[in-house]
Structure formats: C-alpha cells, structure tokens
Length: 296
Image (tube, rainbow, N blue to C red; front, side, top):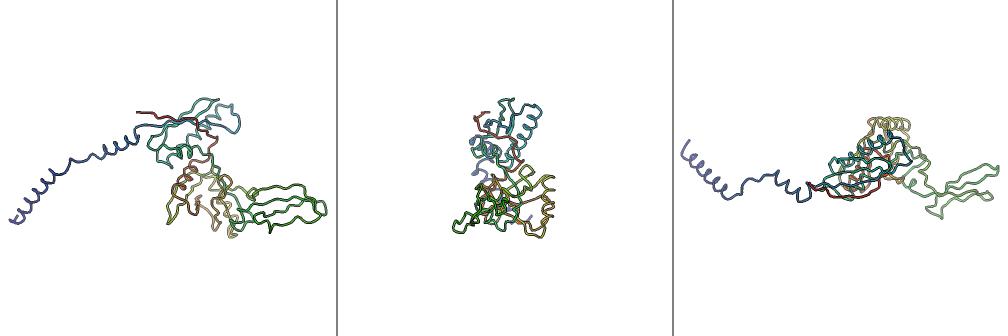
C-alpha cells in the first residue's frame, strides 16, 4: 500500500470513529414498531358480540353447526380482506345464539363491524330486452287490462317522463296498477354465495373490484356467456336490488372471473365492497349487541 492510500485509510477510520461518537446507538426497529403498536392499542383486543337471527326457527343442532361454520368462515374472509387480520371467533348455544369476535384494537372500527356483519345480497341477472343502463334504471308502471276479446294484457309504462308515458287503450278495463322495477323480470344467473374471493384493485383514476367464482358460479357464467355469445346481452350486477355495474357480455367467460367497475369508486368503497363479498353471503342476519376492550 502506498503512502497516499495509507493516509486515506487512516482518515476514514478517524471519520467513522467521530460519527460513531456523534450518532445515537443503533435503533431496534422491532422494539420501535412494538412501541407504536402499544400506543395504538396494538396489544389489546376488542371483543364484540353479534346476535344471529335466522330467517326461520331452527331446532336441529346439526343445522346450527353448519350455520356457525359458514358464519365463521365468512367473517374471517371478510376481516382478512378488510384489515388483514384473522379474528378469533366463538359461539354461544341456542336459543340465544351469538357470535363473539375478538380482533386487535388497532384495526377495530365501527365500519369494520358493519362490514363483517353486512347482509348485502349480490346478484348477476340477465337484463332481457334492455339496451342501456339508463333503460334499466327507470321506474315503470305495469298496467293490467283486458282487451276487446277479454284477454289479459299488460302495458309497461315508463313514468320517468310523465309527458311521454304510454296510455291505456281507450275503452279497456283496468284491473290493477303496480309500481315496480323491470329488474324483477330478469333471470338470475349467479349470486354472491358463489363468489370464492374478491379484492380491490387501483386503476388510473378509480378502483375496481375483481371477483373469482366457485365451481358452480364458474359453470353458470360459462353456460350463460356461451348461450348469448355475439348477441350483445347485458349482465347487470345488483347489490340489494340496486344496479352497481352494467357489463356487456362480449366474450365467453371460461375462468369464472368478473370485474365490478363502479365509475368513480374510491379505494375505501372498493375495499368495503370486496370485503363484504369475500367468503360469500351470510346465512343469517347479524345484529350488533355490544363490544368491550380486552387488555393483555
């Protein structure tokens, strides 16, 4: 080593030693993160209780166990999608059947409880004789009357613009008037119970929710898309009977995957929707009862 190199090494050692004296000791990142979790309640749990309300009385113990397994699986999948945590779940015995959920306090929120217990109903329906989403969102009046031969006839009256509403033929006998939405006549192709997995994806200026169906849902989507291939039919996606997406069937769906595009859907909205759809539909209604902090 020549004299210049030796001098550089000596200077480097001196500078490193000076920095070691000036800088604080090495930071333990694990302890730092743990301290941050402690400040946010990371070591505590929140236990909240939900009452299970079945659609009909259930006396069979085996049926209750099946419901409990479905509820537990759905709550775990929704929680993992929403906040990345898998809660612990236990049940109380009938008749006052309750589900007791424990989850870290740092991720607990009212929205989390609402998301886990949501009874949202998702449906994929064939929009027969509908050309645009605007047509599907109109309100209609079904008018039932008898024609000249006494045969029952139905007129679908668009009431969105009263000035343009169709009229019942003069002289006909009106029997009943019903207010309804045309979605009632659309064939059900698939529903939320057939969804295996859902997740939110950021796009250029919005978010979308991608879906993966189970074996049954995949077959139903494939059969339907093959049947209407090349006809430009619509398969609206409804949440609690409200249209949230209006996709057109342009190709056969072989892989059992679909996308919900909600226009200006925010990340929070997409995450909540994906969480609700994860694990399929709940078999019972869940009513909030109480919550408490469990300190460790």
